[in-house]
Image 1 (cartoon, one colour):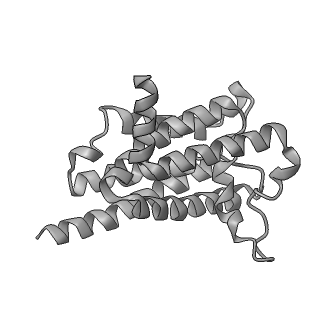
Image 2 (cartoon, helix red, strand yellow):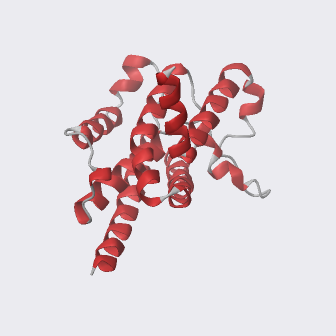
Image 3 (cartoon, one colour):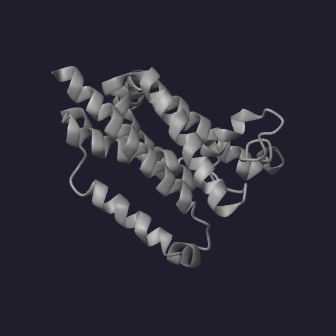
Length: 198
């Protein structure tokens, strides 16, 4: 019962994080059980005004492991930003970084067949990493070694070895694009935070 209360409390404190995880569960269900609907959510031509395709690939997850890992990272990183800066700031951050990471993957690979929240996760990591360096805050303090681990994982994935060993495609350009835009936004908001503290 207390565990259930903890989940409800966390959901109330971080409503956007919770909604993003729920949307990812639906995205995973689409890829698993309704593949005919995938096409409407992939990053495809925007010529006909289907601008949701800039964002919707972040919700598509290809299997339970993919969903669980991205949801855990989203929860750990996103809840810090939503708690500190509010839900509006956080959702704008997700929308901007999701669109940029999806565009990076599409431009790099030329394929529309990708998905997952990991580009946004890397953006949140970059945002927290740089912003915390400029404007330290206990809420943004990450456990030791997290940044190094994530950067190491990014480097390993970019070698292509994970694709070969696990037989899955990794959206490396989305990860790198997310990290870069997240760091840039962390720099911008970090500098603004320093100026406002004066």
